[in-house]
Amino acid sequence: MATGNLCTVEKRGRVHLITITGAGDHRLGPPLLSALRSAVAAVRASSGAGALVIAAEGKYFSNGFDQAWARTVPRRLQTSMSEAFRGLVADLLALPMPTVAAVTGHAAAAGCALALAHDAAVMRASRGFLYMSEVDAGIKIVDYFAELLRQKVPDAATRRDMVLRGDKMTAAEAVRRGVVDAAADGGVEDVVDAAVAAAEALAARGWDGEVVAEIRKAMWPAVWDKVKDYGAEAAAARPRL
Image (cartoon, rainbow, N blue to C red; front, top):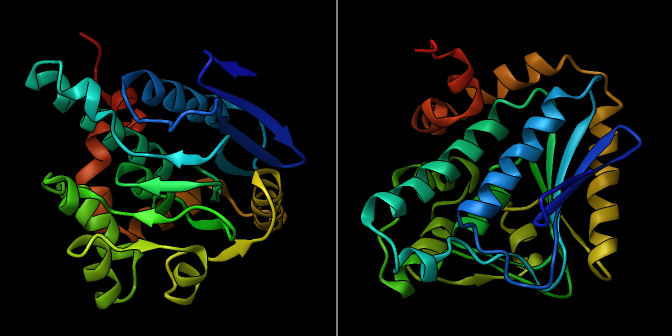
């Protein structure tokens, strides 16, 4: 299944695989965010349980928000981009199945936050880094990014190095510091295969997906509180005028 020309959705065993397509740096502008949210919604609407993996083609997992686009549009549209990503994080936290990020290349700023929004992450060992670039770019960090890092990066010194020093973290260091779960040798497909295998193992546990989602929200309450009003779940619950 294709979602526009920006990402695809396929099924591998019990695992739903969303792949951001193309060889670019996968900037999270409105078109890609819309495509990803549509893909996650399609996975949610599919029958049966399972697990989700999000991966990307090429050198980048995601290089963050589309700042070049943001500089050309009014402030309200810049805000809408951040709100759409806030909604994507909410969609992932509310998804009734385990989630694994296949960090196939560089993951910077919002791209790094996207990887951390999953339950687990597998990172490419030979190429790519996690990089919170805001301090280098002179951009303030948004509140839900800060909460995501606070709750998903266990060590205070690691959070400091990522956010206040802008350190670029390799897979080996990210595993050592407990930021990602595993590093996979080889190319993009090897990382995807490792992430799918990890997701398949979680899917095989046969958990109740709605229970998984509620536990996830309870585990990361400060993040959920900051994103819950922007997700598909909240939109579906609003009365139609």
